[in-house]
Amino acid sequence: MASVKPLDERPAWKALTSHFAQVKPLHLRELFAADPERARRFTVDAAGLYFDYSKHRITAETMALLLNLVDEVDLRGHIDAMFRGDKINVTENRAVLHVALRAPRDAHIFVDGEDVVPGVHEVLDKMSAFAERVRSGVWLGFTGKRIRNIINIGIGGSDLGPVMAYEALKHYSDRSLTFRFVSNVDGTDFAEAVWDLDPAETLFIVASKTFTTLETMTNAMSARKWLLAALKDEKAVANHFVAVSTNATEVAKFGIDTANMFGFWDWVGGRYSMDSAIGLSTMVAIGPDNFRALLAGFHAMDEHFRTAPFAANLPVLMGLLAVWYSNFFGAETIAVLPYDQYLKRFPAYLQQLTMESNGKYITLEGKRVTYQTGPIFWGEPGTNGQHSFYQLIHQGTKLIPVDFIGFNQTLNPIGDHHNQLMANMFAQGEALAFGKTTEAVKTEGAPDWLAPHRTFEGNRPSTTILVDRLTPEVLGKLVAMYEHSVYVQGVVWNINPFDQWGVELGKVLAKQIMPELESKADPALGHDSSTNALIRRYRAGR
Ligand code: F6P
Image 1 (cartoon, rainbow, N blue to C red):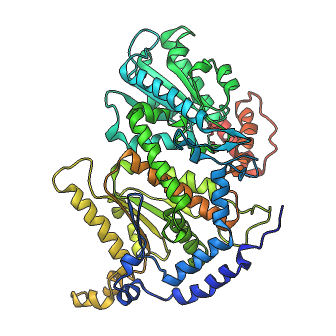
Image 2 (image 1 turned 180 degrees about the horizontal axis):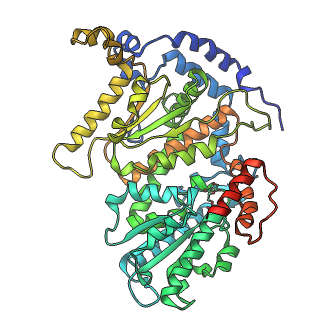
Image 3 (image 1 turned 90 degrees about the vertical axis):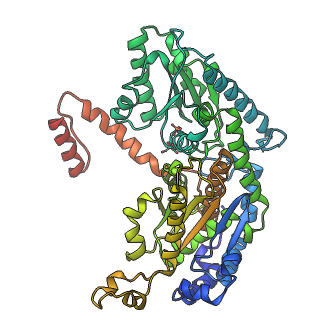
């Protein structure tokens, strides 16, 4: 592999390091006071998203230096390589083409000399036909009853995208259908999902890229048993199970007719797959037209990412701000705080997208990094978080950059709820940035001893993303913005955001431990003394 200059030895990095010393003591109060145009200067209005990053601890020079950095690491070349279908996932020798999943029918994207776009649309058409059959009641259960319940069985990317999208787009969903999502190998997840359902009216979508994932296969087997216990005929499986996978052999082995399998490809990573056939439950819920609108939103952001100048490119700006705080301010986390109840699973979705992608300490050259990589993402919808953890963001000792996401229009206009919601979002951004001085607190009558407790230092950074309305298209844009921002960060850190070797060791050890738990005789245990004792304690106490 060609040798690449280590990130922290690059001129742009060194320039940022000395620049940081000048920016660190600056307060957002001073920055805003010194520049009446600051909000306009640091806001991008693109692809229907108003992206205000003026409340960040940056100056025009910070952004110029960060943009120099992406030039030095050849972000443009990396973006082109991804869209071209180059095998940029080098540790798995795969292309990374989630952008092909939302490419229009007349686009052409090649992998190993083959245009993948016709295959994408073939699957989308097959999904549409299936979704229409379920939604219209043409697809019947084995006993002739109409399907009323859809259960997606999957985990990781085969669950988090479908759950998040279902919750986010519930407003657009068919309310005569019940949707549930089973992911955890904890039997409670499955038991609670089916306890009030009639098997004769229930359809399972088994979603697994590999179709070998232990949790998913265990849940799918339990679903099969649950169904057959009621319907008492193996042939019922065909009416009540469909599969989403890249692995036709394993799907057939499970007993699902591959005619009822919806495929995708190894160039789609699990956490980048919600707009592939993994989105089948989403399509059944919101209908094919809305699903296509979701894809159009993804594609609009792809085009923005591919073509907009970096200085006005939302994923690039978002990615660079993450680098700025992670590597220079030493921030360990980023909070994503959507002021929309429908986005309640968005932070959980982003956790896999961001942390499975950029939680890596090895560079593309196989060396240990000498700088921080992927931050921890977390969050809850506003206003709930305000009454829980915001205290720490306002007055704690840790710097936590925040993404606020809000909408001009609510999907559920009730009284003044929406104005209250948005007033809170704007207030939080303002309070975090500007705080409240001790003098102001004292002027309000606080005694000297109490004043420090009631003082807000401020200077807490945030981005505010304001959009007109939560629609399928807008959801696609939001997700694609974060997807591409993850790539930008990965390129800067010189890591591979598209593999996930770090999940393997635990899987291997669990496989070893499983027979030790099941064994009738007292097995010889070869683990460390702590793990051995835990296993013995469990065996004795279960
Ligand atoms: O956690 C590891 C992982 O491979 C994720 O990347 C993936 O989304 C998940 O497991 C599920 O994988 P599959 O879709 O193959 O069941």
